[in-house]
Length: 563
Ligand code: C2E
Ligand code: CA
Ligand code: CA
Image (cartoon, rainbow, N blue to C red; front, side, top):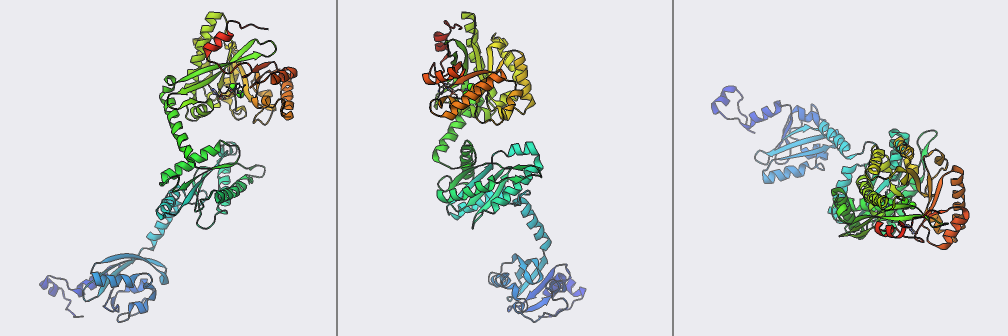
């Protein structure tokens, strides 16, 4: 290398920096710097560079870079420098240099004759921060599992890979109750335990992620229903085992699982997640732990649901075939009319006849049950008003009321206002409530019921005998009437257990001084049995199906005698 003088005037004269000047300037910088010749022998290396590379104080000039630093070859530097020599294009690369345990950013360029000038610095701190951020961004804090964002990226990667795979959505059924009952700390503890158990079920290539709340997603290469079923059986086993929350309390829950498969159920992340969600919701309708693999007809159900929701939201349902029917409740002994139960009907212009079992839960879940019930009340109470005017009296009108409605501050005032509006005495009105065990805990529900009863409105427990745990509740609950579920009635003459339960319900009602009615009476034999055990009030197809109000009026109102 040609040596130039380094006095300032020289440079001033030429007005140019030469190579030596440049090297001097580079060396003075804080960065590490070296120059290699065509054979990759060091021509120059500054102290900072030899320091970072762990060779402080050594003179490396004249020595070969790859012989001195063999680990730099697998880190990709040799390849990079060779390429730069060929192309003349400067390059930057981040490498992990193992011997010193540092991340280095390396900027290299060709400076003529195959020589490479290299500037590098330690970026380990920045790399660590980046790794920490990545952990934060892709990990779920509570469980340490990959989070929603990772799940989405994993699904996307799997789609790109083109191999079939399944998205398995696992939702814990009564997690909200756990939180409400035992607090969030207990909830967090439970989720962590479940996460650990699910992790234990992973096999090669599977990943489990937490989507938030009580939802987990498993991404797996298993797509055969039989394989999936086996795995899910294990999930059920793990989740059924109770988790100890503290010294006195353990908790176990059922889970609902929905599965979508790529490519048959969807080819985008959004589709696969949505289909898994749909399948999960379907499996929620089953009691206990259950799972569903997405099926095409579920797509049709989603579309149906969307149409129903839209019509409920816009209020269009009122003009689109929604109506009420009434079913007579009779004294089975003498045939006189005791009351009527109001039921919703919906003959939809596009979807055909919808059953209440389909649209009532949708109204409930989408927050539209109040509008629906108010509309229904307007329909039936208007009939009641006209019957009062025509016949001088009105049968007791029962209406089904869901827990959401009862848990609403406006409930009592709304009902009273409607009765006033249609001139129906409160004693001629009845509310039927189901799911009573669940709603019992709310003070608001109890106060709504007490206020209604204080005005003479009667309260009936619907579907009695199904899904309740403690009869003792009944003694504290403001109830006038028990409605025996039709399941027990249908067992008459066939299931002796049903008959035994019917007898005990009758004596329970007597003991509590509570009214009683049996629904779903379809045969003479059933009627006779009920009368024999002392249940006189009956409702069912044996007498009449729910009728349009006009038909009911014709058949029952003129002759509504009492025994
Ligand atoms: P539910 O309150 O138990 O109503 C009785 C159901 O049994 C009605 O079904 C009725 O049509 C049917 N039924 C009556 N007699 C017989 C019989 O002899 N045999 C058989 N097999 N069935 C009989 P529907 O109308 O399909 O209603 C189903 C459920 O939907 C109702 O059960 C009720 O829980 C709910 N529902 C209906 N209308 C409304 C409404 O306006 N509001 C609310 N919240 N729920 C409603
Ligand atoms: Ca009912
Ligand atoms: Ca019922």
